Image (cartoon, rainbow, N blue to C red; front, side, top):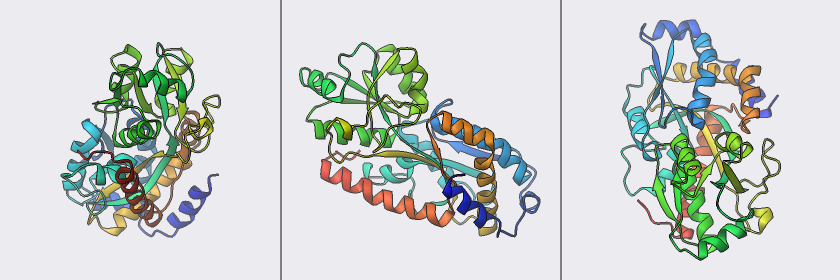
Length: 321
């Protein structure tokens, strides 16, 4: 069992409030789980994986509420402004809660202060995924091709982490690309497969089937180690992109000021979901590493990554939006 899940399980065992007690606290209306991207993307898939067990543990119905927008801003704003009464859960990620904090000059929500981190769900690297017709097989092949047509390749942007990962990579490679915003991973996948966009930075989950069927090609992966489900895709660092290591994480949040007993109950429920063999095996098959850490550990990671990505944005000269 994953070390983080073991720690979180021991922590959850100390929580006094039960799912039944939480159900008494909440009204009979369903709890909504806001996902800031379109259906079938990584955040949506993970949300729907954990909902059945969380509903069982909490004793309430949970309905996934997709609110797709560029970099999930609309969904996060709705979540931030929701009443802190336990009726709203939010699926966020490294883009919505770490990258956006610096990428945007002004946000309608505060990624740190408007939310309570409950637990990370998973982490993964991102694949530099391209339309199958692009030439070459390595990241250096892509760079050489892009240099012959500055700004001529469209990059489908699924979210803030992918945008930052791409911008930092293009700068390090000395090439110019054109970012095109899409409302999540699924539309970005379709754009690359159809040729509407040349490239996107996508999770293994989003690329696996397309790579297997030959509708996409992979120039590398952004993490420091290869993905277990894409073992033939080399890391960018392996290909000479020195010091490059950017990972994408997904997590569960609640609105700020949600009472601590509800936070602890939600934490207990999400860890229980991550422990089930169905969820654990499915995440592994999709190239995602299950986490399940405590609210305190997760909050520290959010704060750390806000600073990490701020440094990358400033040092890379990435323009703020």
